[in-house]
Image (cartoon, rainbow, N blue to C red; front, top):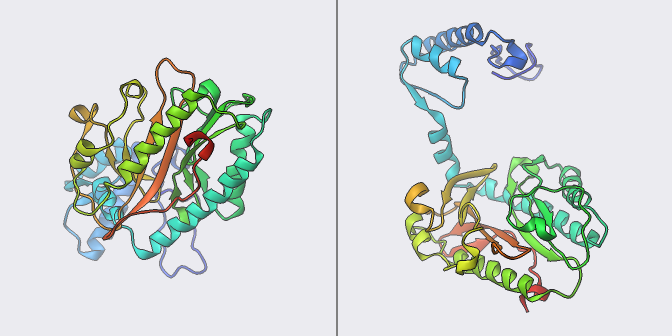
Length: 320
């Protein structure tokens, strides 16, 4: 569907020529392209004797309209695909472990390079370099910030110089080797003399992810996770992260488990199963305070309880 090459390949025994249905490959008349695409799929279905529903994922509305126009029953394939990705195979777990190992190598090199005067972008670029050098793929965002840019969270890396005494927080969001994610957050101090506000925020974030990790067991519902999650201090609630847990695999995946404050509007239920992989998140930054702390671990759910896949060290200087 999206191949830029319209030819046979030497080691492929059966090749179906793509009918381009995006603007870059197919031009601006996507209605005509969609009709060609649907006619091709119709012919293929007839060859195979298929008459059942058609599941499609994230196509142009023009493609959806063309499919409906020929009378096929249409299902949303994203729902099917997300359920198929939910339980990780043994091979997938090995791939994720490899990706986490590469990410943690990059994290170690970032920490070694952290000093006053380095920019956020310079520090963040180290993770990209290590990922590519180890056959990794790409990184979803630029989630590294320092000082007052750590609070509220979700401010991307910039050319700001990191100063002595500032916190530096990041979230890898790294798609590593074999296409699997390593989603890890840590926060460091640029220096060795934290203030009380920094230590309080770090302790709060650390306690939250440690407490919530122990809740991850097969058979627990999403609503139970929400109801029994760590009770956050009131001052950190306004700048809370977008969720307390979320699934991962090839990238961020279903499910997304919300905080109690957000559950009535956004929450949906489900059940944890063995060999799901979830990330446990915390952002702790008060509205009236300068800095915040972002921590996150990637956790495999096993029959015997949670197994933390990301074991990069926490900061004793900020915990004590």
